[in-house]
Length: 178
Image (cartoon, rainbow, N blue to C red; front, side, top):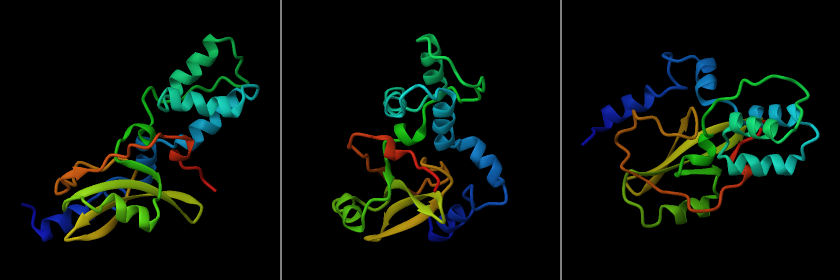
């Protein structure tokens, strides 16, 4: 059982709100999928954007693999930049990530039968930039906490159960800067 003091200390120590990790390091760790997508679109300007979106979904946001697939299919890049990660995009693979912020009514229905410690994550646009949030149930109330990305840090051990989003993912799960 985690005491409220220990829980509060854990919450204060989360990356993104901590002096332990600078913001630039968090951006490198979590990547910026919007910039990866925009970079791919700029790299292959002749390739239809909607088809690029389909490739992002098909390959779960593995931008390196998408680039490699397009090159092997004979598409010529407009530039030779290839600094894409060789991993899946967490926006498309983290099962409890709900993409754009659900409405208050939808949040209530998500947590209707959930036990204490149940959680989801989502993003909302704040001042033109995506911000990630954890929404969790504590003492029959829904609480929010800002996160550095769509995945919940391991430091939040007091959370007991993720609530999986079973909806079909689409390109809107990847936030875009405004």
